[in-house]
Image (cartoon, rainbow, N blue to C red; front, side, top):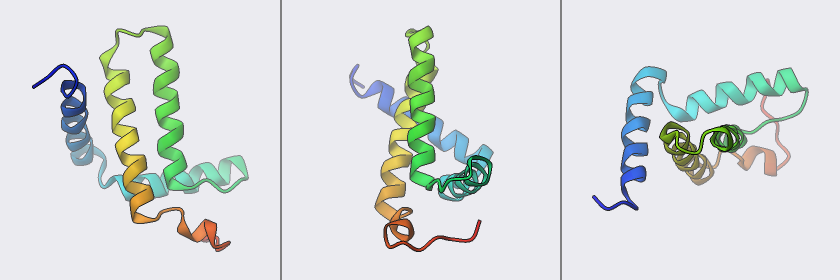
Length: 101
């Protein structure tokens, strides 16, 4: 395992653990998006949840850059974001169709 791939491999391991603890990432991010949409009064997409959570981890890393947990989670949220875009979690909004909250 190279020093470049080690954080990625650790992020993958963590994603698998979190899936067991929290369930499917697609359904989880859909639920979070609906809750945030209601709370904020604006439409939030599941892939935006992943981006915002990644930004939170980035902000935390400014306080303690040596905390590897922030970087592993940041990479994990990047993977979730890419997967949500791939499966089209944003398509309904682009077409102007809004799911019921």
